[in-house]
Image (cartoon, rainbow, N blue to C red):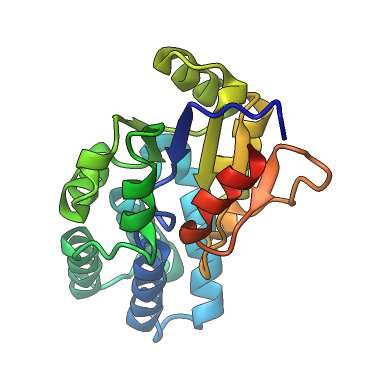
Length: 234
């Protein structure tokens, strides 16, 4: 593809560079178990998701907001009768998530090392500032990135700003991530290339339709396929 000239590659973090949703799902199961005397797990999960959706505008993305949504759900499901011991257990579960060691996904480090130097590498992630900084530090990947952007939301405007501040044209940029809704589609709308790397677990809030027929959209099975994809596009 002769008009392909890539200068910058941006990467999502959670469930693209390291495991994330897996720990939320485990905690959801534990949460449903705590409230099993009050309702069945399907009802509890449904109420928790509704609370998360309501609270995104107040708490944003991340473990702290998730923990507050669990507390709110526990109060709702028990009709204001939730035992203090359960609230303690919910808070403990949230702290355990914040302390959990970072588990990088397969092919991540070697791919970043191969691309570093040849391209400007940026990490673009949304979520709690403190927690995302913690995960980046524990991952040991920070030195491979030229810049890190922790944002409240990923929209085409967000990507346009980041591309501009990096001094590159959108068509010279590529966004790589596991969320069609947050990583791929808005980046393409901003004029970038978008590469989808599916993860086994993706939060329902991040689901979106595949942009079929979009020439700047590509999908790979894992991050290790990215260098070959870039070579084939040149």
